[in-house]
Amino acid sequence: QCPNLHLEHFYEACDYTDPPGVSESDKRLRLFKYSLTGRAKDWLDTIPPNTITTWQELEMKFMDRYFPIHKYLERRADITSFEQGDSETLYDAWERFKLSLKKCPKHGLDSHTQMQHFTQGLRAQTRMFLDASAARELVESMAQNEYRVENDRGAKKKAGMIELDTQTALLAQSTLMNSQMAAVLKHLTSTPNAQMPVMAANEVKCDFCGQGHANGQCFPEGSEEAKYLANFKRNNPKYDPYSNTYNPGWRDHPNFGWGGNQNSNQSQ
Image (cartoon, rainbow, N blue to C red; front, side):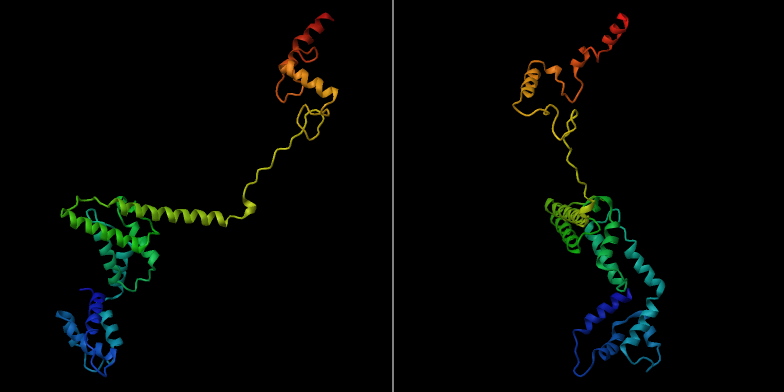
């Protein structure tokens, strides 16, 4: 039996008896030998009398004898290298992981790190409902729900399969989405405003006079030039001299047309 579990059960047994006028340490020192059997009891009986006077001394000797450093490393590795079995359900895997924690109470791992080791050791089809940030309460709820469904159906699951009802699956996915959204919002709120891209407004500038207005607005509204220009653009849209793109009317201009230059040279 695991010495850590034995001590835990012994502490529970001590809670049922409370002799008057006896301290908790003395009570444990007197009752501990009655909790041992087999070779462990023989080991305690071989200790010379009056060499152990406090419960702390007896507990330390017991752990040194049955839980040396190599045992501690093995039990801790059961936690950090946890893997779900091929035919093991989520419920059974979670119960086995919690038992590994009890067998090594001084593992030195916080709750978040414990859940990381557990979720990383799950099979892919099980891990899809959880991530490393999943709360212990969520895993406990899913495991208990799976256990209840399995008992209600009264049938053994096929090896390697996991069955979760729709409500539990949605709860797991919602928790995962909330954690991801919280991470995105935290990243956005931590970004300095100076780093946010700013699109500068395009400046409007006339290509002919260089002033800050659109092409074709060089003349005051209502002037003879503006009226002439508006009438010209309406009757000859392709000859718009203020167009921002290629003007097909330039092709017929004697100074811009390539053919016109050739004719001029030939005539000379």
